[in-house]
Image 1: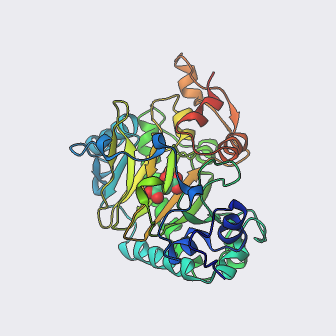
Image 2: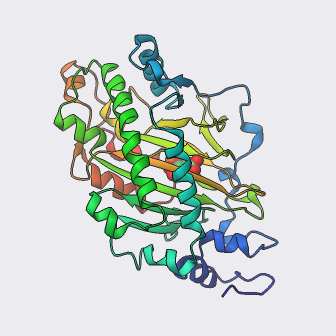
Length: 359
Ligand SMILES: O=C(O)CCC(=O)C(=O)O
Ligand SMILES: [Fe+2]
């Protein structure tokens, strides 16, 4: 039952209990129609998005994938991955209905009662591969983020049928399976751009050996300007495929200091971004770029990223082809699971995670 006091969450343990332990999430807070944002969500000034820093004239590239073989298209993909770290793709092979179905399934999951969603929380989920949660790492954060999520790490079809929530299982699987085609096309092009013509088994594992899909839910927020949906970070993936709804709110750091570029929703498109693992593997040729999500005062927003990753047990480092070329190496070899642990142990802190792999 939600507390009914005027300012119910002065006490952080009451807030944690309601939001985290009982599984209400920020969605539960949002539905209480609080007059003011609980103080635990108030971000320091420097972490709030200042609209004066938004560069309205700039936009990340939009790439038509129907001709992905074409050398000009391939060139524009590699250029976008090195200059912006972000681009949108249109006319890709993932059917629109698959995207619409996974968005509907995301709403359905978050509409479940708190006690049902809570069966998938850190304390109750039967597996680490399925996790319902809120914010990013509440235990390590000075200020919380206005976001709930369900994270689904794919192991096998058998496991999905026993562990994944039935309301979204098939839709998420379908979205992941159908996206594989475009993931392979992109990785093939990006590897060619590094003069690597063949993706053998070792490279295939490094580039796309494991996948995780998150269903992110950003409910209406009482004081969106005081908090964030997701704080500044870069992803730990090789590539991230992002499906956003029509609300918008994702910002990417531009290339001259503190300027941010909005990623406008385009129906049927997918946003692609380079993650830290690909930055390391490519010895810095492709860049994982900081991004953040603002909270919204009038609309609920969903967002469904697929994180394409190395396998946890893979050693990542600059590809042997780049080492043989005599390039100056920026990164060392690190165990991917150590890298990921390091990312999740701290609050979002911009691009700092990649220092873990610097020489
Ligand atoms: O919701 C979004 O727009 C992006 C979320 C994100 O950056 C992430 O989950 O890594
Ligand atoms: Fe991200």
